[in-house]
Length: 382
Image 1 (cartoon, helix red, strand yellow):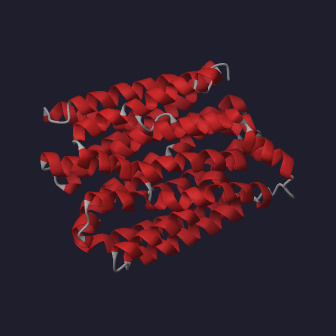
Image 2: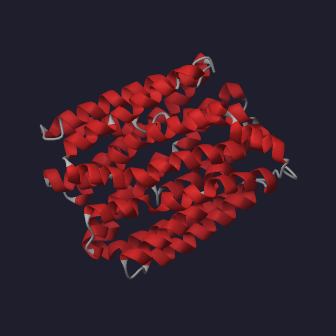
């Protein structure tokens, strides 16, 4: 019985190591802008780079996890990501850095399906919401670690030191998966069950909702440091601390949401309510964008934390709809669509700020989870 908790711990560590270089990269935005002389649009492109790579490989990695098992897939992917991040530490131009971050995301995306599939297998439905909620805390955990460690590290050694730190985290994640997980290869993959999973309209609906719910997270977590730095003269460390508080709340909210769904016996009803809660808090943040500063900081912490609460529920719902044998493919599909928020979200948000203002951009971001909550209505009985 104890082994399942070891699987959960290893999966969480592995996912956190990858999330540090995706969700957490926004903490480095001011340093990258200064070192490479970037525009806001170019900053947005770098923040989306890992998601560009992940979008291409998430589904293939999911199929590979179903075919060859979680251990092999997770270890190879994160090791490759670590190598690419070492290269990013020595990138000489914006183009080279962008390309290396794309490759790091393409490799590291293996962890999404592999670790999720492992946890899905070892926990029963009555505990699965909590277990996958804990596993999904890896995303804010990885970003929180970056928010704490990277600003002083970058101040002392620039982006080179920061990227080497991220590479080290990816290597730790690869080691954790390699040492703990047991491969559970599913054998030859039959085409029809996979196609049936990929044609399931419920899974597609949940995947598109995930992308809509993901946009406010991009707005608050990825751009929060830059917003506080540019608009309210925060230094990088203080701005990162505000996002760090949001991430701590995000960790607690993911665990709480998972347990909530277990108690009520539904993933969809809590998911819909969380979408509306995110919309409200992001709208309040937009209204407070000009101050007063104390309320604004509280608004960012609350909206940033809630913007991460829903993820474990969507992840669990998709995996359960597909069943354990095809959960890798289903998670790969859902994460591919979700990565569209990571890929297109930063450039879109940056363009919205440039064309209008920070308050307007945050207000628009609040509309996305409202649309997502409405899309979930046909799934309310699940």
